[in-house]
Image (cartoon, rainbow, N blue to C red; front, side, top):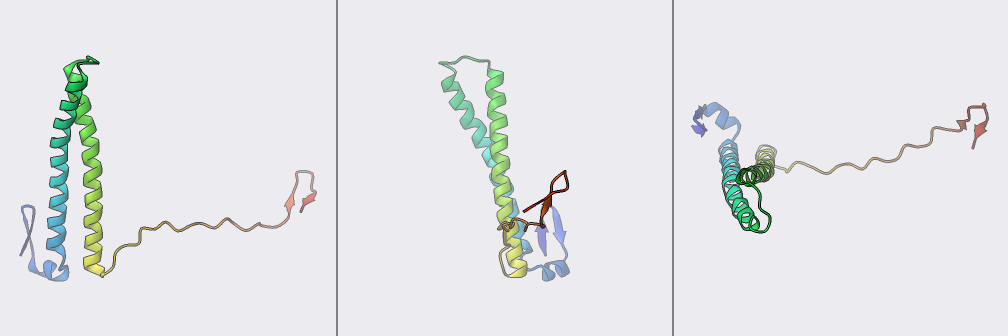
Amino acid sequence: MVNLGLTKVDDAIVAKHPGLQQYAACQSHAFMKGVGSVIVGTGALFLIQRAVQKRLPYPLQWNLLVSIVASSVGSYAITRWETQKCTDLWVFLEKGSYPDRTVPKEEPPAPAGPKVTMYGDKME
């Protein structure tokens, strides 16, 4: 039986999806990395701004706000990146190949034929 958070997953589902435990571990690691990056990022940005505050004084509330918002955005990016890697792992474990993330190039449309001006003349 596999645990996903606080929920235990039935053995029949685990047998159908053999990579479920690795995927769950990967997702847990991705979320913990996001939480850690918020904590470390907020502390680091706060300390950097305290050092800059000697030259450019501004209130402490702005220091905290900028630190929290910037580290939250960074944490979101890190968590999204790691979650995408977990999704790729899940697809690989289920299908045996990595998903194709290339964007196909669109070819320009072929000319439709002779164009007609507003006066009824054909342009070549």
